[in-house]
Image 1 (cartoon, rainbow, N blue to C red):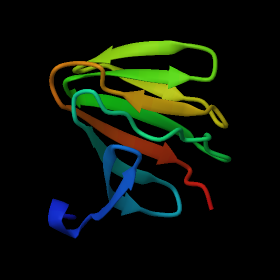
Image 2 (cartoon, one colour):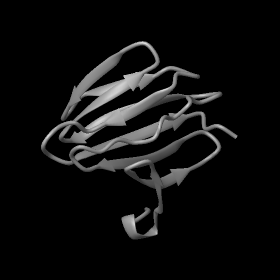
Image 3 (cartoon, one colour):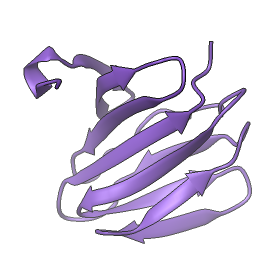
Image 4 (cartoon, one colour):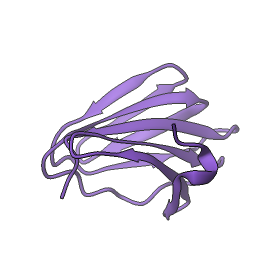
Length: 105
């Protein structure tokens, strides 16, 4: 078990991230974005697919060729190597749960 206080906290742009678990097969964490803010562009992952699940709020997920609006309860898979960015253009905070498998080096 990993408590939030024991997770690794870091920022990607205005996106507050918590890394909870990392093994040789999987990475799991969360991202929190206040209204009007956005994360940094993630250039994509070399080996794994990433999944985003919107636990709270709404978010715009911007890919290299399209944008997808995700609402609470929605999920999306980010293909290997696909650049992406999370944007909260809405009036409430957004909480995203994410996992990457397998992890990058």
